[in-house]
Image 1 (cartoon, rainbow, N blue to C red):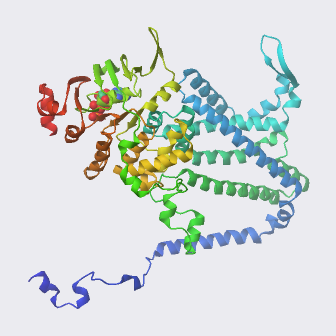
Image 2: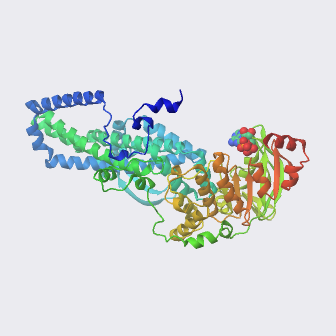
Image 3: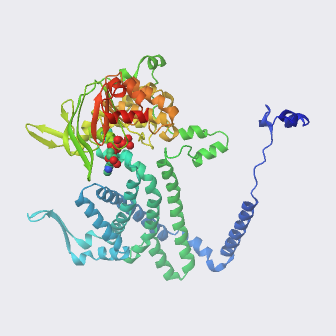
Length: 603
Ligand SMILES: Nc1ncnc2c1ncn2[C@@H]1O[C@H](COP(=O)(O)OP(=O)(O)OP(=O)(O)O)[C@@H](O)[C@H]1O
């Protein structure tokens, strides 16, 4: 029996399981979960029983509670608790962030000082610290400010007058919070991917901007949940300052119930006020976490307000909310005709730089990764570096913009040494700040794109021109729009990297590198993280760049592409250049047997 004849006796609508029917008119029955319904009813009964017992038992003293809840001394104590929490949080996290940055700074002295601080203040119980600070006047009767051993004095104060119980409390809470928050911030910084640090450095962003715009905003996602735990502990920890007889909320409550002996109702007053504080903090936590989650999720859930508006049927759509802010919306889009006419070539006004690599060597431990490498690249030329995995291609490329420091030899772009300043016969090693400035001439595109996930496509592009080239934001946005149009992504300006395909992300990364108008553009296997069908779109963009006059150096496994666009192909093995020359020669008739062997494997 054939399949057709199997269906022959069935009614017409069952013969074809999905004919062109209009399902929109069908009634939809939501899935039912009896277990959840039973659980909800059970929880409701338990909550009702507890509330009933709490409200009907006169010993809870709700009338006394109502009498004292808004009483003036209680509100004054609450105000002090809030002030102490605020000051402890702000000052503690400020000091904690500085300590965390010192710890990861790479300076052994700063790192040790930071470690020592955290070790000391995490060890001392808060109550002990508060008592020591309150008794500082016994140890030092006056506090003096001046330059030691010179007799220069700016003033001196009585310690007991300067460090009142309130200031002792603020100081104690700050010192204690700083020790814990420093570790929280450090944990967040360590959680940021190494590629993000490298991408920021490769764009030449000043160190401070790297931290404030790239590292800390991303670190915030890991920092916030634990930071709010710390703030909540601090809010409750303020109750320990009762030891200094400072009338904050808990101390005030104690004073009152010792007088009127209504212990439980007054403890409930304190409890409910602490609940209010924590609820407000949780509300802020939710919103701040949402803010720093920008770009972290492909489809972020709508905010409470968005959700409510959508529920009411007049809100923004989920996609619009997910796409996030459209920072360039106010910038007029360039005329479509102009977009068509111009090309990437016209957007790279700076002619290419000449690269000279001279006897460069580099080792990791005992492994020599670059071994006496010398190479000259003409301005505006396109060089493809090929070779087996581990042959040192990426290390050579990264050495060109000083992401790797070479052990021997020199690299120069247009006669200027990378990493050094020449004065006569002396070479002075450049400081990090000066190296970052020179990176403006060298753009880099990474294998894994390394876009900043918390910034939209256009924000990724404008970051460096504003910070490094000093462009106004409006001008940088206009240029970025134009660049996005050139790489075929005019409509993706407001999308976060996670909302883009791999090929689109890499094209944004190319636009980001081009925004600095570099003389030299380095590509580190720009297509190897892409699905085969996305490789073409990225290679097309690079091909167009190859005619722009910018010097391109491309580490690639795409031999066909190298043959098509490169002026020069370099074959590397075990840290050495075995062969270099025109693509037709190196790829067609290689001299070296190892090149022939490699090509036979990959072609
Ligand atoms: N930071 C590092 N510490 C120790 N060894 C390293 C480090 N970076 C690279 N290496 C080693 O140096 C060698 C060269 O690495 P490199 O990344 O330059 O190779 P490659 O030719 O680009 O390889 P691939 O094509 O797989 O990316 C490899 O053996 C690698 O394991």
